[in-house]
Image 1 (cartoon, rainbow, N blue to C red):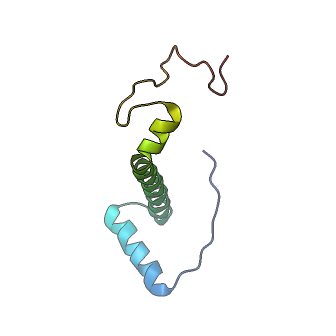
Image 2 (image 1 turned 90 degrees about the vertical axis):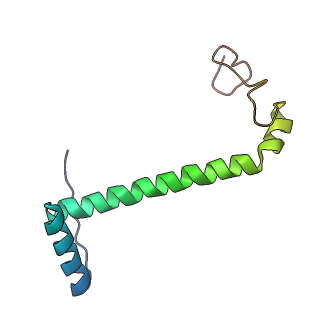
Length: 90
């Protein structure tokens, strides 16, 4: 995979902390920063999923009424063979 170079400015204490953490983990500074960013991106994704789940729980009754479903159940839900009327289906 191609790599892109980034230049960042941090205070000396932050730079030293990053160096120490990378050394403790036995990875390069580049790898350490890359892992931090990937971890952060994953946490953001997880936060989104949790927020969406909370939203669906909060408005479950509204969706059930709108789409003719029983709250907490799958009655009336489209199955793999019941797609009629859904966007992108024929």
